[in-house]
Amino acid sequence: MSSTVNFPAAFGIALGSNLGDREANLRQGLEMLIERVQARVILAGGLYETEPVDCALGTQAFLNTVVEIEAACSPQEFHAHLQAIEQAMGRAVVREKNAPRTLDLDLLYAGDFVSDDLVLIVPHPRLHVRRFVLQPLEDIRPELVLPGHVKSVREHLAALTDDPADVKLVRLGWL
Image (tube, rainbow, N blue to C red; front, side, top):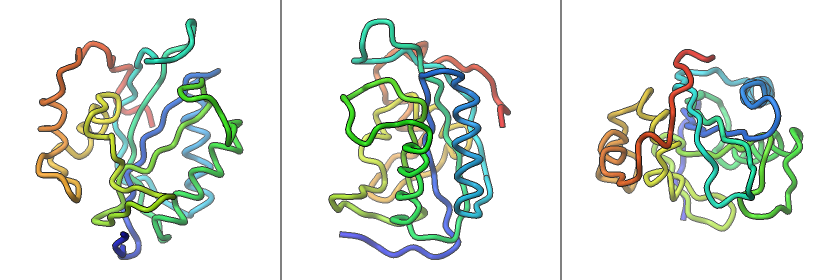
């Protein structure tokens, strides 16, 4: 089931990297996205470092952030662009679960758009339980209540039971 979205739309995106120059990877991926979809960044959360979970021993920590971008394309088109950029930056289509990656781009939300088909689930089904997503999202949209949710981003973050110290602020204003 999918809903429609008005154009231009505000897209929330989680960015992560744990290979190579992680911050440069995030910047490059975002630059590619802006150029590719003629988008503009509306808001950018802080840059956070997170230890890898369920990854191979010796895996480098992740850098994570969230940005909100305005673009005049459908959520499906936007999602396809995200996947193409990940692949252009070296992410294999077929890969082990939790494998290290140069760039990970997840579509978190697209305005009030809702989709639960086989290709695209929006809002992202696990964003409300991931501190490494909620923390930078709270930086930019603390009162946001996503379609299908009753709690705001701030309330979801406060409800988490994991250790807040597991997600460490590297810097605000990184972009």
